[in-house]
Length: 125
Image (cartoon, rainbow, N blue to C red; front, side, top):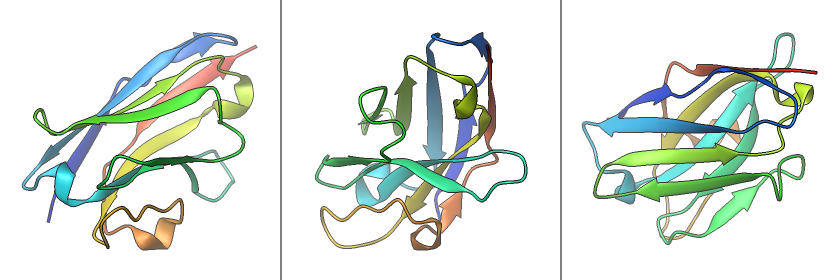
């Protein structure tokens, strides 16, 4: 089973940008659909962005136009570029991997089998 480790979380001011990274080991991310999720205190974990094995992407409405998911299969890394951050984006961000049909992708927590430990993003107004 693939192991995942996130990095890049930080504290930024509203309007700022961050780039999160997720390093994979024990498996090739090109064999999985991959996703970014986040969980704020007192809230359920929610899907932010996902990328399928065909490279197609899906975003939550709340981040469309601001966040971009990408992957470097040669480096076995997943990324999340986040722009125009606002305090509502404050959360612990997780990357996740799942097995499925070619091109399939999902923003549902239950569709993923492997998870990282998370990296904290804090946005102040």
